[in-house]
Length: 327
Image (cartoon, rainbow, N blue to C red; front, side, top):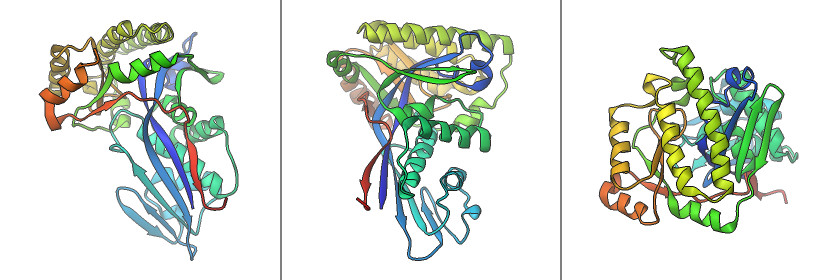
């Protein structure tokens, strides 16, 4: 049995500039400042007695031919790795696995590839995992998404990830242990209770194409600012920058936000947050919230069980094999 463990991600600034149409056409490309969160999706791959394929996620499928699988990511990962029969595959998530704004679909793809390659006896690099995940999701399946999620999941850590026509470059940020500890105490993820497919939001056409382009250019510049704040340990300014990033993002398409999300945002600001930004493409998922060390307890007290919270703890390993029954 092989078990992979792969983190989801949190994007501080730059989200949306990692899509090919923007990154490949802009002189400076796209850039995202992101963090791999210490919340994971586990993928198990185990040999079967027969040649059938059994997969278990939010539903279960048993097929004689992997081509008949409904789960596109699993089907294409099996094709890419050559592991196409006689296996059982299970995915288990620490958090809701779709529509959370944490890049969970790409986390699944990266973890699947890692587990299947290792099942076939091949170790793979983080770069290969990210590139193959992008190929499956963007080139083969045709999802209208960017490339940040795959690299954040594969590499782990806190990174500046650049996207240009020449490729993707991952630059780990050098943060002190004190800054990392403060990240966990000052930043909180707050679940909105809503979920929505990133692809459905990203595929929508904006009312004003030129306005969208200008907003994305502003978001790209915010990523440079975010890097400076993180490396300088200026987390208060980073929190304030989140608010500007959210205001730029929420005007890209109509479905990025709605009345319920706006109301929750305003309530979090009213509780003392210095910045609140919805993660991912929009429409639901988690808000990233910055405030003092007491804010998380206040949010839990005031919002109760309707909006669960998660501290911003870092996964530095990226996608890794935590069990190999053959070793």
